[in-house]
Image 1 (cartoon, one colour):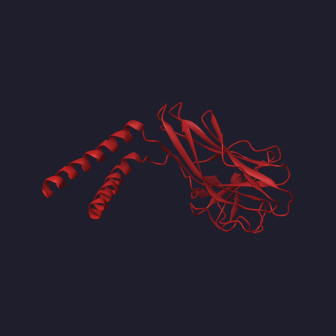
Image 2: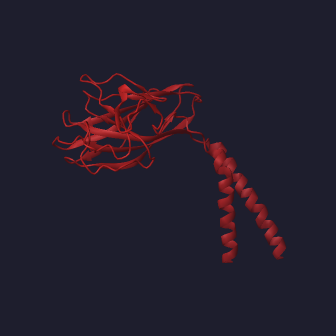
Length: 239
């Protein structure tokens, strides 16, 4: 009996695996891992001085632009805008990542246009975020991302850090419904308080279409049909 249970369990897993590639969509975000950049110095470079493939910079804060592309292990290396020691060497996505001061006077949005959308379709956005405070400054801070897709804006989980603390990398998931064939995806670092440099980190940005419920139902019916046929044949063979 236990052997038969194991066989059906295995068949369910195999059937589900066969359907999974059809249900999975391609990532619509260009250079979501921030690996492609022209003019990068190999350590830490202001976003305004390089070309980050697929991404553009919006209007910066009143005092300037403190957004950087950073190589693994360079976020707390002692250079300008470095956070307190203890920041993880790299994100779960690996490779380079973005760090932006969340102080409204210094923050700068990064954005790109996502094309090939289906009006009414729901899309799942995932990314990794982390947080820190610029070394040498005092007081607790908060950090998060304001994410806008089209006219819909959502906020990521808010880090609440003690002075000099580090917010470890964590995955965020958001859902947006397309209202046009092309929409702008924007990330804006939001931090408090002013003057205590709250730094938000970003990596591994991905957006995929969520499978329609009807497609999922048809896939499930296909799996049930296959298993039902195998079960009937097994019973006849046993008889």
